[in-house]
Structures are given as structure tokens and as C-alpha cells.
Image (tube, rainbow, N blue to C red; front, side, top):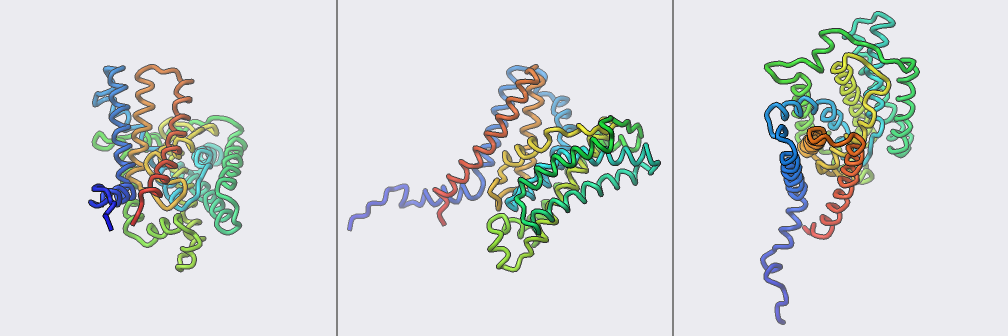
Length: 336
């Protein structure tokens, strides 16, 4: 019988394409090309864009979104989602300021209690999702509203000043010329990278995202893992909120509005799948950096804030759309 295989097939090109796609190189290439295109566009419009000072400014803005994105990456890898992170971030600053100003609690302890309040919210989210079996989107959407409302109730809708030099050091201080918030996010990314790639816990999260039922049959404590993941997500969101309060030297119930959408866009743009079971913290960090560069470039080129909102929404839509395209390509070419 005559061999009908094409030269490409006989050389195994299609299987190589499948392995290439499964290896997430397509995502990496897409991020790199997108970053280069964005830089070229903004550099052509502003002479100040490609300067060390400007990129130093971008580095100072990475902290909050990057830290909160760690928790969101873990959540999305398990196949869930956490819409409440912006509200939780606002709650941490509000609780800390009220305890310090109204009850005389030392600010360091008040900050820890603010983080504890956020951690409790995350645990409750995880409990409702893992134990009560309520859909993650519905659960965290409810928390989004409840926690934001609680922040307004506790603060009476007022902004509280936090003029303490030690507190402001977290968001504004530098060590050796490097922002403290940037140092903190680097440490956190290293810690969670090790957890995700070199521990059973991290590998189990990928398995749960691939199939929670199969993971349960394999002996993985799915409910416990989900409880931990949502608790971590809220804790990291609370930490991001403390950094915001430190940078502004004040807390406000309106703080971090829209943070959840920015974080989800960055994480999905970085290659984490909304379907679960796939993603990386390195990709997330690159996704955050691209979004920060985009925001900075729009300001540099004096684009109206109204159009900035339009562009931010479009980026989120494109990120989700690319995630779906990537899944289809992987399914088509992802042979063994």
C-alpha cells in the first residue's frame, strides 16, 4: 500500500506542535510579542517611556496587584475564582485604622488583626465552596458585596488617616534603593513558586483543577486544599490592602475598587486557564508587568481616563478570549 503521509507528518511535525503547545511556549511567545509591541507603540508616542526612571516607577506599582495575583493564580488553578479580593483589600485597611484610631490598639497589632479579619473571610469563602458546595463565582460575588458593605459600615463611609512613619515604610520605604513592596513580592513569589513546584500541596492543586473527582478518588483531600487556597487568597488580598493604606497613609472603604478585574486579567493573560489545572506564577508576574506597562503608557501618552477604562475592559476580554483559543489549539494539536 502506498504511504500517503505527508513529509511533515512523516517527520513528526504535528506531534511536535502538540508538545510545543502543551509546554506553554505559545503563551510565553504571545506575552513576549505583546510586550514588545506595547513598548514600541508607547515609545513612539512618548520620549519619556523608555527611560530608567519610568521603568523604576512601573516597578513601584507592581506590588499590590502582583501580591494579590499570587492568591488568584492558586484559586484559578483549582478551577475556581475569587471575585472578592478588591473588597477584602479594602477591609484590611479599614479594620486596622479603626482599631488604631478608635480603640487605641497599637498599629502593628491592629494591622495583624486587619489581616486576620481578611483571613477569616477567605476561610468562610472556602467553607461555602468546599463544604456547602456553593459555586465559587456566586460565593465570592456575595462576599464582594458583603465585605465592601461591611467596610463602609465600620468606617461610616469615611477615610481615616494613618500618619505613622513605621506603617508608611511598608508602602513607601526603600531598602538599598529598592521599594519594600517590591522586595516583599519577590520573596512571596519565590516562596509560592517553591510550594507550587516542589511540594505535594502545589502538585495537588493542579490535579484538583484537572479533575476534582479524580483527585478525590486518588486520595487527595480536595476540601482541605480548597479551604487553604481561598484562605490564602484573602490573606494576600488583605496584605495588598495594607500596602495600599500604607502608600496613601490612609484607609478608605472605596479602596481597591476594580482590583479583582485587574488581577484576573493579569493572571489569565499570564497563561493560567479559567478551566483550571494550568498556570504558573512566572506567567502571572509577566502578565502583571504587561498590564502595569500598559497603564503607564496610557498615562504617558495622555490618553483620557475614560478611554483607559475601555482599554482595560478590552484587555480582560482579550485575555479570556486567548485562554479559550489556547484551549482549543491544545485540544486540536495536543496529541501524546
